[in-house]
Image 1 (cartoon, rainbow, N blue to C red):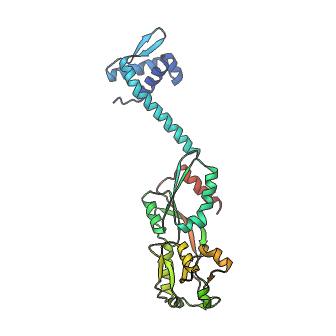
Image 2: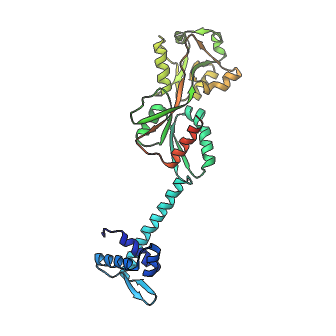
Length: 296
């Protein structure tokens, strides 16, 4: 392969314009420089690429063959530059986000709505999963950033910032009315059927650890996949549900459910945005993060 790709740039312009003079003008170099580049390329390839005519130059058969390939290369370069410009001006691109049901629904969704209004050409993909799974996606470069709930282990190469507070509560319906407005100990939860999350999530780990710390040996009667289902079970008086308060807020406000009170309050947690500082963000992902930061 010819090492000096500048020769191909000159060759492409001469073949496209059909004139050494015209190519020199287009490239802002001298005519002798154009002629010398063509000569060097012909020498390297061992064939004639142009023949002179009364109107300038035209491609030989060998030159036409080579030009068909070089032309495609230049078209791809131009297309790449165009696509890059679109990315930089946020006309196109993709943002990949990792978020749980809770962080998506009660925090992220309004930002995605606003971002789509500002940049309708950008694709937004959300990978749904609990905090540990989201952080794994970040380490595998499957997402640009994650919106997770604390607590979580932050790797050295990660950076995070808090964006909202959340509160874990226990809620119940009329069947458990005897517990309403009564100050309880966490050990009292051992006496009621509990409805809690299943699997590996920051919420489950946090609540389990906090209850154990305060001497409560809880054994849930129901372990469900989503907080929405926990609320539905509580509405049907199947037990006392443990959820992030936002999931049950409308039912608490209406009085259909009530919040159990304890002598100690479960400390509030935070929703955080986590990024990998070792990887550069795309312009689209950076724009969404900037929108989130503006509101803090």
